[in-house]
Image 1 (cartoon, one colour):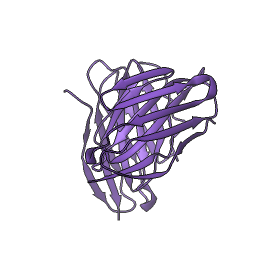
Image 2 (cartoon, rainbow over the protein chains, first blue to last red):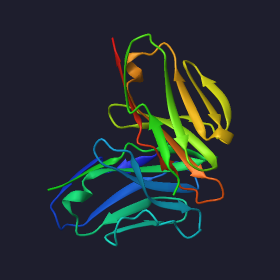
Image 3 (cartoon, rainbow over the protein chains, first blue to last red):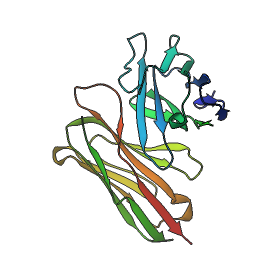
Length: 111
Length: 110
């Protein structure tokens, strides 16, 4: 597609449930990033994938968070046993030549 | 880790006014980007500018890497310029991850 695509655009879940968020990067972009943005705040780095290298997971806030990416394609961010504090917009970006292109995000609400 | 500070945190302008947004960073960087997040949450890359000056229409940016700051200039502001402007950097010799500042919230009134 023409841009970074994220799905779902909105997700409402109950506390304790698992959720899976999806990111389709721009074709040909080798690097992919996940960020979290809480209401009125800046972006928090979560995880970074670059080609077949080991991902940089240094931003994942707890072991309830994990992410996968197959090759240079789709990535999924999984949050297990969701907590209310996980409510935020989760943004994905893919990069080319160092420039980041963002998806529209998934707004996660944990009730 | 690297600190990225943006100022001012909030800015209110009348349409047609000019403004300067500042980004200070605490370490040498090899990547600096300015982003605009519109009121609907979409983030758009404005400039990739680890050093030097670039211009795109009414917007321009200057990064003085040796003094660890970058400036974003908005001239003849329009209501559509409203939103949050973020500066983000990568540490030179470090990971490829971008560290974002907290942003400047710009409101342009008609």
